[in-house]
Amino acid sequence: MSDLLRLENLTMQFGGVTALDDVSFVVHEGEIAGLIGPNGAGKTTVFNVITGVYKPTLGAVMFNGVSLAGRKKFEVTRLGIARTFQNIRLFSEMTALENVMVAASAHHRTTLPEALLRLPRARREERDGYDRAMELLNFMGIAGRANQAARNLPYGDQRRLEIARAMATSPKLLLLDEPAAGFNPAEKRALAGLIRAIRDRGLTILLIEHDMSLVMSVCENINVLDFGKRIAEGLPEEIRSDPKVIEAYLGAPAAETGS
Image (cartoon, rainbow, N blue to C red; front, side):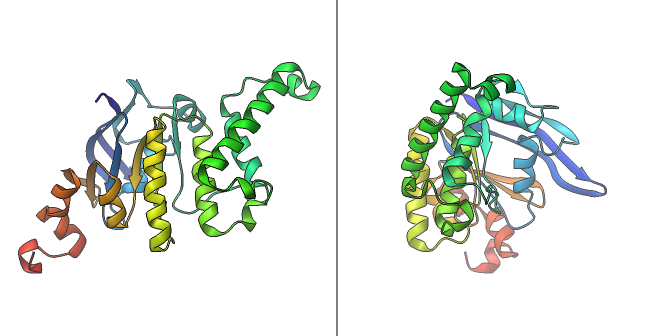
């Protein structure tokens, strides 16, 4: 598999605090990759650097062979990276359909005069955006809620709507930040199936998640952070038994835990 995302010696400092310390890893095209670690390990900071929220102190992020250095958030989106957030960030007063249509417009070329005058390209792109949004809502199983305000949707449907909105930008790489937060066991099983289905549509996925059963069931390769450092990388069965990972999560060497 070819490399889609490559982090090279990534360091992120905030004043005297080092949030990421010389982190390097690769996400291959077409895989479901996991990024795990205890609270405060630096996982969301990695997402924020990738998507242009933070400029790294040192190191580089390469996406599809292109450097993301100095790219603004909208430029990163247009290159083909989309994300969801640990805390849901929907346009609460807009409908589910409008939320997804706004994201679908990220690649539209309609100018303001064209939109105001309802010229052919504006009408065509609006129609295409509607079709794209409805297809994604249907894929997520929430097409029946298309005209409901996002704030009125059940929590699980809001999570699915946020994923649909991210997918509407036509990404190559989808970053999911704790998508199972607040889900019950049945919802987590359904989410695992959804993540696999998204990959089957041709997307590459990088997943941050605290639910280890979900991570181990869907991820093909996992990187582990602890205090901003990468401490392990490998297949799920390798990560599950890695002494450094066990120590990071349980706070004691593996031998002391009886493992």
